[in-house]
Length: 166
Image (cartoon, rainbow, N blue to C red):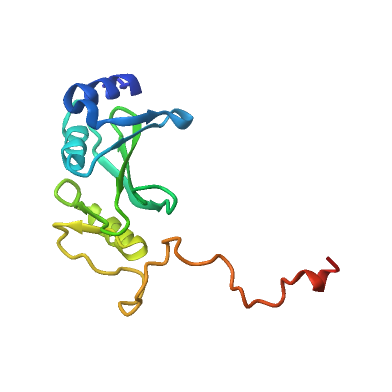
């Protein structure tokens, strides 16, 4: 089986989805692009079922960007073991209504990855068969990876400058 290049993957994606594929770059040779949540399942299905054969879902996670308009990026890492290539797909969603379709319709392994992303970032995967917390206790009223809290306790006294002669 012949390997496939990032250029060939990008050409196939833009031929199929056009303007829905944006912000393309290749950090360290890893093809990375953004798309929208209304076509994410179609994009993932295309990558899985086309000649590129991205048959392995490596990871689903999220990143919180509180300074951006759409504050949460859901990130998918896919690997084609046959073609020896990887891609990263990003979808930015509204942090106040963080919903996106589930990828469990394509990969069973997405189940636990989406539960972890829900647990830590509050992203609700629509159509998920069992979306509930996986690592934190159910009573936890927050999603700990959201950058909504100060990095340090303002009441700490061991970091005051006067203690260090400043």
